[in-house]
Length: 168
Image (cartoon, rainbow, N blue to C red; front, side):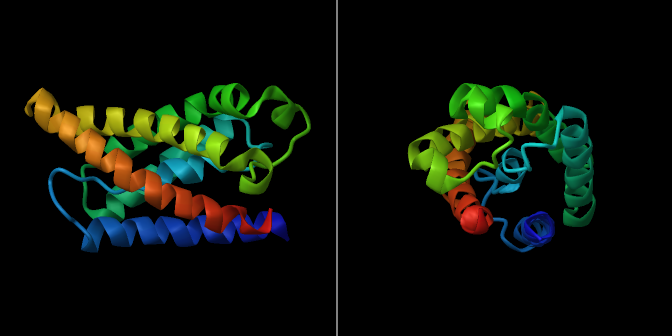
């Protein structure tokens, strides 16, 4: 039942991401995404190859339905999925993977969860902003977009983490 509940929450949050992209375009200086948190919070038993497939499919669906450039979100999420296991082992500890425990805010604590979210968000935003700008925007513009997006996305992703981890 827990596994089914996770995938229902995952689908609802992907739909929420699509709605955010379509209806909540704040500025060219802010990009809002909760998808990196979803990739980080995939069940621990989800290995790298399935995580890559899930990341690609999720990014493709969001790009397709949100009307953005096809492939940018997919490429950014693929980086997150590829580094997910290394991130989990380095931030949360190898014993989490060995015991096949799920990431939980109550067990790992807000400091470790914040660190993990900030790292995966930084990876995602770096790739997304570099691909989106394609070398046509200045460093200062990209830096401001990265900083503002990281701040806002972190707050949203932490709320997503609380929502997903509520039954873990």
